[in-house]
Image (cartoon, rainbow, N blue to C red; front, side, top):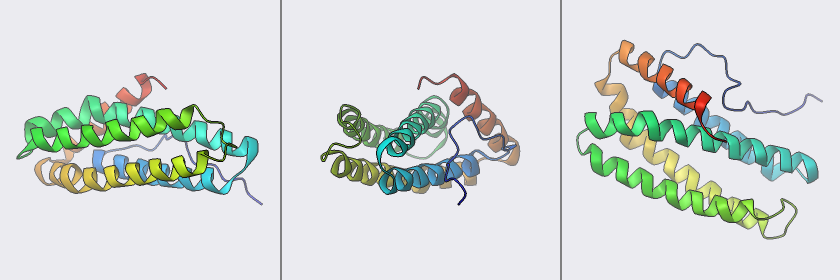
Length: 160
């Protein structure tokens, strides 16, 4: 049986020419990693959780450094849109911090993971609706490619 293994941020060598496509693919990778954590046990679960935490950290750092500033400046009501996304991120980070103190075998781990998953998925849907749609509508192909490069660069430098 082939090994399940969702890519880690930075492992992806795709020639991204569209920041929205890049971020949407990462949202899919995050969903897949949640599935891996939920469906595995023991060391396999610990490893999948480590990859999930790393991808979340790198992805959010890139959004905070590249996507949110662009949205603030360029989208109608951008300031409020970004503030709402940052509030969602803070809630998810609090849940993640509580999770990080638990062993993945702890009985409290899975309920906390489900809460984190719900927070992260709601956040991703809001980004896709309120930021990504507007970025795609308001930015030409060159701008989308430039933002994708900036996201990849921020991810490469992000703390994990």
